[in-house]
Image (cartoon, rainbow, N blue to C red):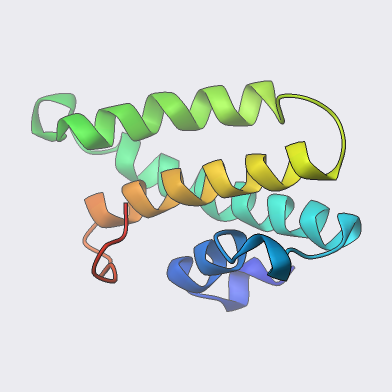
Length: 108
């Protein structure tokens, strides 16, 4: 798995690249797998923060993560899978920032 050898930001950057840099269908599938693996680890860590100490953003990221992983892509085809990966990447960034991982300026 490639996600384990990358930082969260590198993994997210792969998913948030411009559309002309989108991987092929197999590449997107691998990217989604890497995002889910990394995101599940982050989710467990953020979930360990007592609810009273979590920011609103952290709570929202936990809820969104559960929804995105359970529901999968909304639609069929490469474009839906690519957009799903991009959504996962944004949530991962939010969870990572909760844990104090540095974020580039302008990251959401």
